[in-house]
Length: 505
Image 1 (cartoon, rainbow, N blue to C red):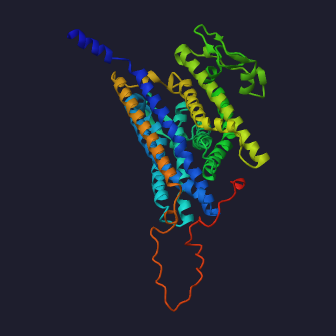
Image 2 (cartoon, rainbow, N blue to C red):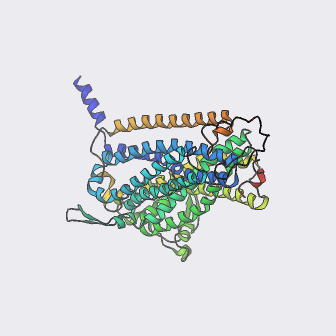
Image 3 (tube, rainbow, N blue to C red):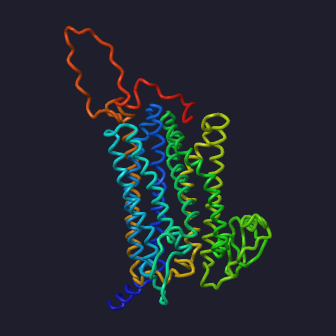
């Protein structure tokens, strides 16, 4: 019996650092899928709403109304998963928060304000469908877009501060004694990291939503409603994709200048040298050599600084002690994640170029089923690329949690039972994820069965029909008068929808 208890105690007394890392990574990877929808879906909903009101487009009106309801569901789930993350900072990384919380917490204070603003206006927008006039209702959606962008920027500012810590003063013991909130938020890494994430949100959100409509079109639902849903979402993603490639290139050069060890891990550079090849795939060995992969001579040096080309010197991993750089395993993870992110980003760029050229040349979306097949997969591919990008950011900074100031091992909890909370969180998040998918699919089925809305259920129409006046026996039949512009709903059933060729022109 004693031996049994000793065995259980030994099993429970595990190193908490790997489990804390695993739990934080899992919850972040789950939550980050919901962020693009929270940031970009409101914008796409407003595009459909604007078209509905401006052009009396009944299909666009139906899209906007349904998207707003989907958006509310994903926002609620994102609020839950985001709240769990906020608790994890204190539970998993108490020493980090104890030393740096005064600075690190500043951006989160602003994120909370934007979060509540977004929640308030989502409620106004959804309940305003039957209670506000068309344009007044449309404008209640604009703060959702603005709050979503600035909320995302606030969170990324906190992460950027971990990469470029500034805006604080410490005493001789290393305790923070004063904080400059402006310098904390607008740290050196913040502008490019924030731009990279916001554009990624529109890219991933657009491809995710478009992939649903592409799948429906492959299954035969090629009516104008589904085409319009695809066109709005995919157009947003297609515009964001080349912008993202430009921002990503600038951010990579920032890393080359300010985090040379992370850059060496990205490019598999064991020793400092010039004319460094861009190695596609490949891996770093324990002896410091690189094996496998496809080397493109001099390309990594040229991309790092085109002004000096292949003569650009790239700092190697061996320029810092082993305990101040990622392990060999972490280097291989960072390099593989980089290749996945760049590879999938390039594929999505080519898909966007195909789509754009068809609009320029033929004035319509591509008709090929192969295009729809790739578009149907684009949502998952975009999510994988985004996850890979965050792996590059976080694993590439190892072993630091605050760059060159605090290591991960010195920040984690000493609680050896973290593995229990990890298991509980995994089960909870799986339940939340499955429930969310079932709820969204159930809503989709109900919408399809409804087949649209009848006139009295149309947004911007009265809740109940007015009773017609009793006809007078002496009065002659009269011609119905035209409704006023202020009372008429934006979509009249008598007005035909635009022809498919005129979509979004």
